[in-house]
Image (cartoon, rainbow, N blue to C red; front, side, top):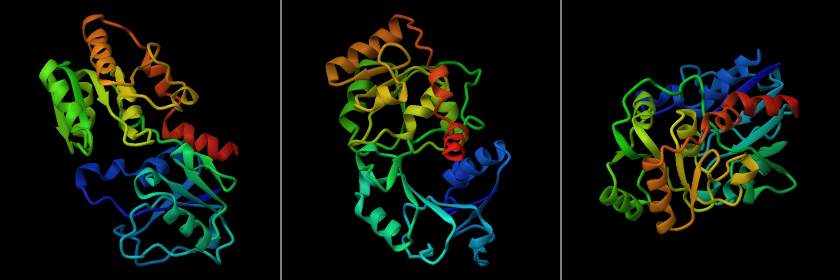
Length: 270
C-alpha cells in the first residue's frame, strides 16, 4: 500500500518534525505502510506526484493561501480531506474543497461537523516526539500555546499559583515546558478539542481542561484521568486539588489511545 500526504512544509525549523504530515508519515511507517509527503515548501514540490500510483491520498492542508493545492477531481484514488481547523474557519471551505476534488470522505477533527460524507477523526499526538521527560517540575501550573481568548483565565492562574505561561513555545521546547509543570492547563477554543489535551497527557502531566461534551467518547473522564472545569470557581478548585492533594490521575494510559499510530490503525482497519 502506498499513501500520499499533502501539506505545506512547516515554516518554523524548531517545529518542522512536529508537522502533521510528518507525524502521519511516521505512524504509517510504524504500520509498515509507505507514505510520501508532498506540498509547498518541500524539496519535491516542483515535481507533481503521480497520483494514480497511490492507494490513498490524504490532504491535510488547512491554510492554503495561494491556491497551490491541486483539486484532484479527476484522480480516481481514494482521497480523504482532514479538516483540522473548521472550528475556526467554519465548515464551508472544507465542503467546497471536498466537493471540488471529489473526495471520498472528510476526516473531521470537530464532531459537530460530521455528516453523511465525513467521519470523526479527532486530534492526537506523536508519541515518538512527545513523552515524559526526567526533568524537575518547576511550576505548579503551566500553559503552553497561544493566548487567543484565554488571557483572562491565564491572568487568574498567574495571580493564584506558581504559574508559567509559555506562549508560542514550539517543538522540543514545548515538550520540555509541559514536562516542567505539575499541572498542564488547557482552555479549548469554541467547540474544539485541541492538540494540547493530548500533548499534556502524552507527557504524563496531569491535565486540567475546559469542558467539552465529547470528552467521554474519547475516554477522558473527570477525576479519573484528567480534571475538567466548567467555570472559574471549578477551575481554581480543581487546580488546588491537583497541586495540594497529590492526586494520581493515570493520564498516560488514556494517552496511548490518542496517538498518531492509533489514528492510522483506525484508518487502515476501516
